[in-house]
Structure formats: C-alpha cells, structure tokens
Image (tube, rainbow, N blue to C red; front, side, top):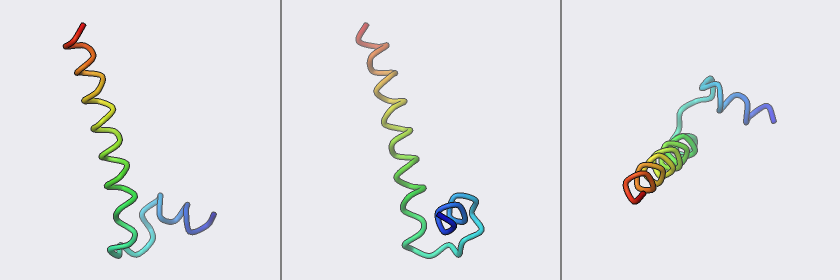
Length: 43
C-alpha cells in the first residue's frame, strides 16, 4: 500500500517499470473520451 501511494504521489523513483501505469491511465482516459465523442457524433 505504501509503494502504491508513493507511486501515485510521484515521490517514487521514475524508472521504466514505474512509468507505464500513468501511460495506461492516460490511454484509458483518452479512449473513454474518444468513445464519448464518437457516441455524440453517431447520435
């Protein structure tokens, strides 16, 4: 739990293994936004 909180706050060392969760989060947000815009365009 402590490592999770440290990674979320950004105080953890930024190694190659600690960067992918943030990229995954950005990808999920972008996909959700794109899906919503696509639904609005289809309507």
